[in-house]
Amino acid sequence: MPAARTKRTAGRPHQRVLTRENITEAALAVIGTSGYGGFTMSSLAGKLQVAPSALYNHASSKQEVLRWIQDDLMAKVDVTGFTAGPWEDAVRTWARSYRDVFVRHTPLIPVIAVLQVSGAPRTLAMYEAVTAGFLRAGWQEARIIPAIIALESFIFGSAFDAVAPEDIFETGPLTDESPRFSSAVAAAASRVGGQGADEAFEAGLEALVRGFSMPRQKQVPRQEEQHS
Amino acid sequence: MPAARTKRTAGRPHQRVLTRENITEAALAVIGTSGYGGFTMSSLAGKLQVAPSALYNHASSKQEVLRWIQDDLMAKVDVTGFTAGPWEDAVRTWARSYRDVFVRHTPLIPVIAVLQVSGAPRTLAMYEAVTAGFLRAGWQEARIIPAIIALESFIFGSAFDAVAPEDIFETGPLTDESPRFSSAVAAAASRVGGQGADEAFEAGLEALVRGFSMPRQKQVPRQEEQHS
DNA sequence: ACCTGAACACCGTTCAAGT
DNA sequence: ACCTGAACACCGTTCAAGT
Image (cartoon, rainbow over all chains, first blue to last red; front, side):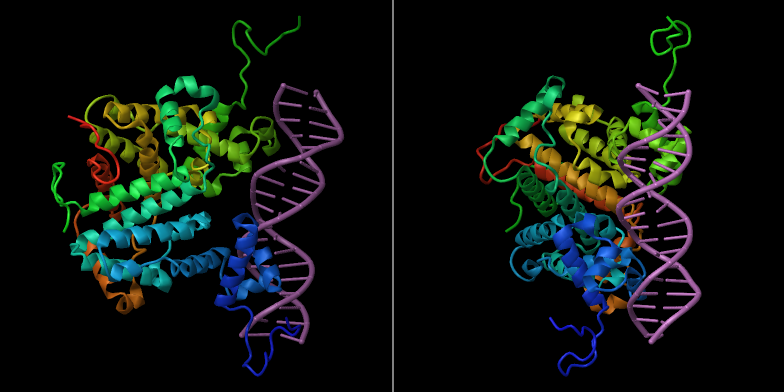
């Protein structure tokens, strides 16, 4: 790594260190090694080898840096399923990758919920791809946004759940006071397969996909052919 | 024996100020007026008219106070539907009140996700009531916990969504780059009814209820009639 | 046993001063 | 134009000293 860090890098034009891209990249590096607890403006500045105050010439606040990270991560969400194949499969692929991306970034979820899409191009691109897939599957236009929001709510909540300790439902000394719940926890834990959070996510995803793909009418329908 | 005023004295027993109940109550008062941004150990101590350091004789950390609040709020969630009537209605009542309670307390959601039920008696009582309702509806025991977790994930995510500004989906100058999404946003916004978040919540809740109440046809052996 | 006040080790952010 | 270093107004938490 060359000592002279800013000026003339092998004939290339002058490169600035503190760009949005560099800051975002450095932030992700800090978070990757130290987590969000270790992500401070000071640690970020240290990674970039500048004084903390220098960051404020390029980002208006730590919150803005978090928004940059958020939009960056959104590009990693897999929307390829929405261009071909059944809607159900596309939603499953999208939802799983969406959750996987944000499981490691749960502190961003409160940021996402407030994020204005107008300033987040990659987030917007994701929504466009998802909407296109819903239209392609024949969805009525006015129903698409509520459905996307509902799916996202489930995905964000599931990301939180995925980082919870495995034993949060162990009732310990209070088992006698919650016999049915304790028994249900034991029954769920004894099943094979991976983590409890994954099973819950898959169960909920399946319920949502089925619930949304059912013909809508007021009564709970009898079992019926859902889609060709 | 000198005036032992600590316990069991006739007349007016000495009342301690800094009990778990008092601290929780004061914390809720501070949050009610100043929000979570204004909720600090200092402001909490001010409300109780003690020095901040005094709190640490009764709570090990701010995080513990947050856990107390969380368990306190859980008692407000309506589980009455699970004792009588159809499972679908009980879930709807429960989910709506659960979301309503935590919409004003979204900063607690990361706390809840990690909360050990063994130290949260009211949280445990809620789970016991919900589990009893699922059993009453004929649910297979091993499926109950994943379904509850999935519903909770949706509820927590929806609580975040409910506090988002209404215009987060306005595409502004980027409308041309996301024509289908922008059009869908406009179509959803033009509908009657309350807020977009409420419509999304109801749509997702309905999908989940339907999806979970459908007979499962795929991998699992046949299931008995769940509800009459 | 429980409270006070000072202190500690941090935060994010601002700003005059430099180049 | 952009960085530095000091400073500001906070945090949560600890602890010796008091009663």
